[in-house]
Length: 292
Image (cartoon, rainbow, N blue to C red):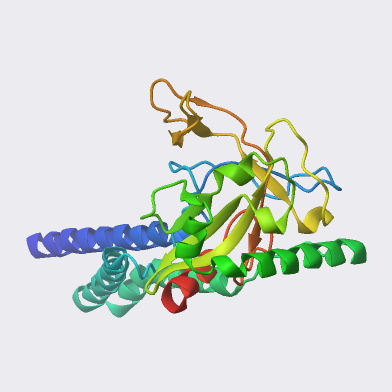
């Protein structure tokens, strides 16, 4: 009786640990879709509808988390360790109890990995727009790509007056041009207000240009309807001097949240979310980090 009770107790502990590790694996990788990013208000002018959900995060700009992060080996090792531990726990149960209970303990791991694979391969549905919308969006993208080509080198961007707006150690770094932010121009490819670089294994890579209005109260122009959704932040913490120091609800003392001007990303690298989406798809981001 005592031996049986002891075996049952050990089995219960191993099963508990296996389930715990499987849940950790799921939660660690659920960031594929639940990416940490700022809360956005988005707008497709012609439809007057939001093009994406509002979300919160603890950073000032879009920072994505993916199952793999080439720039953070510790992140990858933790994910691999959780996976190995969960499989090992299921194997231990199969050895100490029976193979069916071990297989049951392995189910959460298989489901989590399968779910990640489905998310990775399932491309989001993108708005199609009218023929005129598509033509206008294509024209803006081509003009922006051509004008931004000279800034493939971050050195050229800095020489052109662009300065880092968020820490240059972040995965994605926004460089703004203070002169262009106040020149009164709107959607001028030769005077784009911000450039976005991604830190990769080969150095900074230009991944997007970003247009921004000067007046926070001004409505954005309609370019390509739902194909070109403008967005703005409503949870960034600003100091009286205009410096971003965090995001709600954790604003430092003396700072406050305000609506930013409307802005429009133009992605110069493949992006499953669309060429004008508010964010870069995490899997596309990993590809840029690895291959530039």
